[in-house]
Length: 299
Figure (spheres, one colour):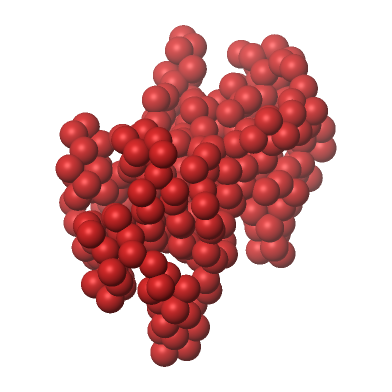
């Protein structure tokens, strides 16, 4: 059986789609999967256990990336095509069955929307796949003892909680977790480094993982953390999928749609209209309280 899975370029959306991909894998343990995604999310799928081929494509002018992808997948007859991007490209393929997720924003959690579209009830939670080498590297980097993982970056400044509050948050939690170290996570590139720099400067003993990990390595490190607290970002979704207790911080994005989905998750939301509240209005006290609750620690 051959299954084609077309996913997102954005890391967060790609991670959210992994729950239905894992469900398909469990339903069809002998199937061979081809996964198509944008280059930012390549690492989300690179450790998928039944991966036959990973097709990475980037946006081109005049939507020519769809033509580039189509040329690579049209020669095959697919038993099942799942398109979570809602592109409709599967209509131009030889496929026995198709599942095309409609685009656009709708009420409700995104992972639940995808699960419902596939007929899964309840919707499967996202997962993160890693290798033994990824886990070994995480063990070397983080060592033993409690680790407070912080994600002070995001894809735009409006979604970022003030860096000095991340620093104060670490000190508040470390006072309740003797021997805890901070681990600072962020993606590659100058913008991510700039956004993480104030937190790293204020926490010189922190483990600096900004731009230094592949996505599977990041998932393995996040899995070892005592707790992860971060802005709404792909890393937040990866942490929840990896099984880390994950607290997502929201203001300029909608928690009703993109709150982290996992076994142990929570949110802290700035006061104001959903998706329009200023992150500066999210108080340290509210985040500390939510973190204590997630950890099962008395305030």
